[in-house]
Structure formats: structure tokens, C-alpha cells
Amino acid sequence: MSDIIASPSVRKAALEKGIDLERHAQALGRRTIAMEDLDARPTKGAAPADTSYWEVDHAQYGPVTEEPMSRFAQVSARNLAAAQSLIPLVTHHDRADVSRIESFRASLKDEARARGVKLTALAFHVKALARCLRDFPRFNASLSADGATLILKDYVHIGIAVDTAHGLAVPVIRDADRKGVWQIASEISDLAARAQARKLRPDEMGGASMTITNLGGLGGTAFTPIVNPPELAILGITRTQTETVWNGDTPRPVPMLPLDLSYDHRVINGADAARFVTRLAALIADPRNMLI
Image (tube, rainbow, N blue to C red; front, top):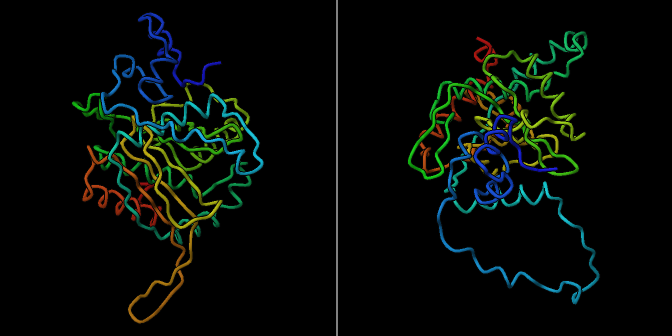
């Protein structure tokens, strides 16, 4: 079965145009193909680097075992390598006060149980990011393969990176800006569970405005996520840390969420990234603003 992610309409159009999706995706250096990608041409660049010296007989140094990479992982690896080599990537780091979100979630514990919904903090982060993308349309865009045209999107779809036994999957929450946190939380749980079971449909992946990759359950203080083209940015989240914040001469402990925004510097400059993350942190700090 193909590891290329494409909707039925895209597959039909590719068939009508005589396009081999596997080869086309490999040439573009990605595994998600949208309708606009069918006419895209591979970006011309420098010749591939000589990696022949990587071919080492490791067994000469000690015992080894070999584990074949799945086709899914191989396609993903090619996409990431192409993104890293072609995109001038910068990461902006900041943090957000999540005390009000945690207090609000605690107050909704009984309602969440009654609804049968696991109301995670991630649902609020998705909602905040969706709101922020409406406030900053240039982040909710894609750059054409030739780098000549910026495609601004009048929809907000948020990708959620899910770590699975068979590789990284990125299901997408459609129209996240139009949904409440209860619905978003329910969709996150459903999509993550089906990603683990390899039961996601092709139309549930691809087409994201931006992706969130959340390492909060594993740890870490910061990292540099790689942009997943044709998206222009990706938001990384790590574990919330309690930090001392001073209010005049009075210290108080505050749970702070690290935010790591990697972005394509061909389109987004540092000042815009700083404004974007500042706005995102403000929305997270006061969840009432994102619910209006």
C-alpha cells in the first residue's frame, strides 16, 4: 500500500494526468501531496552531496544488528531531509503562563467526565494557534514550489504530530478556528488513537495550515522542530515548568509552557515570528480571549 498521503480527488486527478504519485512525491521530497502539488516541479539545487563515506562496516568495531526502515519511515525521512536542506529555518523560543488554563481545566473535570471527553491542555493550544493564524494570515500560507507565489489560505487546519510505533503520523483537525475546545479535544483523542492503530484515512492527513508537535509528556525544555512543507511554520511544545515570577517585590510560582516556533525565513522574518509567538502566549495565558 502506498505511503503517500493524498485525498481521493488528488489521486483521481493524478491518474487522469498520468502522474505517478510515488515518484512525484519522491521528486518533491515530501509524502503529502495536495492538488496544487500535482503541477509542482522539483526545486533545482546543488548536486546531491557525496555520502559514500557513510558506508561503513560497523561490525568491524563490535557486534551489531540490522533493522530495516519501513517505507513509511523512509518517505518521511526523505521529506525531512529535503525540508532541512531547502528551507532557511529559524526557531523562536518563548514561554506562556498556563496557570489559568490549568485552573479552568480543573474546574471542568466533572463536565469532562460526564461528556466522556479527555480535556487536555493541547486542545486549548490548538484553539489558541488557530486564533493566532487568523490574526496573522502570512503564517497561514504556503510558498509555491518555485518560490515565486505565496498562497494565502482562507481556512485553518491544525496538524497534530503523533508518535506511533510505525513512525510519525500527522492527522489534521479541520477548521479548528470554528470549533470549540470540547470538539477539538474529542477529535485529538480520536485521531491519535486511530493513528496508533494505523486506521487514519488519507483525507484526515495533509493540508494543514500549521502543525503542533508536543513533547510535553516526554520532557525537555526546548527543541528545534523541522518545518513540514508546504507549511511555513511548526509549533513545538515541551514540558511545563514551574518558574518564579516577580510581581514587584513579591515572588510567586507560575507554571510556564515552553513554546518553540520554527519558521521558513524566506517568507517569515524574525520580527513577525516574535509578534506571532507573543500573541500566542497571550491567548494561552488568558483562555477567555481564545473563546471569544
